[in-house]
Image 1 (tube, rainbow, N blue to C red):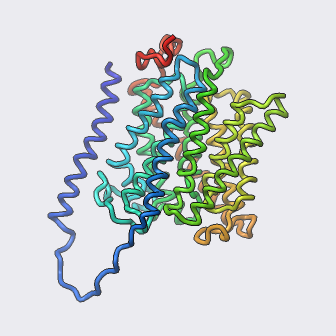
Image 2 (cartoon, rainbow, N blue to C red; image 1 turned 60 degrees about the vertical axis):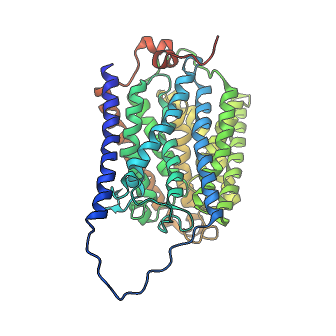
Image 3 (cartoon, rainbow, N blue to C red; image 1 turned 30 degrees about the vertical axis):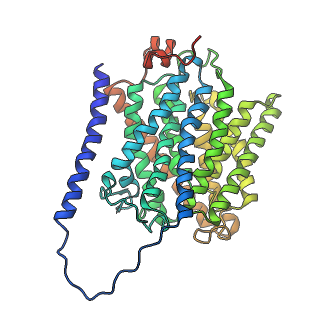
Amino acid sequence: MPQRRIVNAVILLIFAGALLYAPVASFAQEVLPDQPAVETSTPAPPAPPKIDSGDTAWMLTSSALVLLMTAPGLALFYAGLVRRKNALGTIMQSFITLALISVQWALIGYSLAFGPDTGGIIGSLAWVGLRGVGLDPNPDYAATIPHQAYMIYQMMFAVITPALITGAVAERMKFSAFLLFTLLWATLIYDPLAHWVWGVGGWLRKMGALDFAGGTAVHISSGISALAAALVMGRRRGHPGEPMPPHNLTMTVTGAALLWFGWFGFNAGSAAAANRLAVNAFVVTHLATAAAALAWMLIEWSSRGKPTVLGAASGAVAGLVAITPASGFVGPMSAMAIGAVGGILCYSACMLKARLGYDDSLDVVGVHGVGGTWGALATGLFASKAINPDAADGLFFGNPHQFVVQVIAVLACMVLAFVGTVILLKLIDALVGLRVSDEDEQVGLDLSQHEENAYGF
């Protein structure tokens, strides 16, 4: 009970502080302008950008698709992989992340990630509480859709990223610790990373790093944070001696299919318009995913004697991850190469896990960490200005400098994600404890954390 009160108090303090700041700042802007209005002879400002209804419709649709990736997509994918006694607790982690981070994003997260730049590291608090984020376009990010449409789209990225990490610590983390970690990780790690990569003035963006839809900010950050979390949390009780097979692969494959479907909004929506670039991202996303699913299935078939349904589903997710940063910069043939190599690399990484001895319960490190890293580096190899004239060519198209930039971006994201996650987990462990007791772990998270049962028998 004291631990629960600590978590509730911390979350309420963060939210209350942001809520209190927003109206005060807004009032100050209205009654205490920076300088008095003066008459000038300067020409009238140009007309504001015109909202395009087709672009807006596509971005709202894409936002809904990315929301679907977290719940039900990721929730079902992860829930099927755990044991039956932890199915509801696993679903709850994805579901409540959708609520928790949505509120955090509106209060402070969007301002930190995309607000006016502060030294290339973080956005200012100018947009806290969505102050100034209205229904007119913001040309810095999307000139033909309302600013709030762009904000809600990016919110769904902020939601799914910490939810991905839960797969590495499945079946053993306290719900109170999970809530506190998710809130702090989103605020102190994801939001700065998003600003580095996508925010106007972010240092990686200024350096020329290419990440169309989240290879660094989403997949590398979650995959490397998952590694840190698995190491800090330790193995599940009974692992590796006790068998811990997935309890419902039908649920997992359904989740994977929903992820594949929703990922079109994730990648094609990152064009921020219904245009040629969105079409390219849509096509290459599908082809890379198909190639990765086939590659994983074939290498597993060759090495283990049987092709598995879980392997095909995992390969598809690996392909989705690998193509994400490159989807707005590469063509169809490059995409299939990226997907196929991604499937093989991610399969190999997941097989290596047992030898290294860490307990990444649901292979977040092998799929998102390795797949995201390969995708970010592959962008530096396969990117072509023929696909996106506003970007840069990669190594295979005569520009080795771009590959160097991608390596720097990968390393920077890895360092912040790993070090930041370790610090946060140690802090939370000191405050409320990270793990459930041995008895609660034996009973399962469904009963011990929520007093519910996923199945009625």
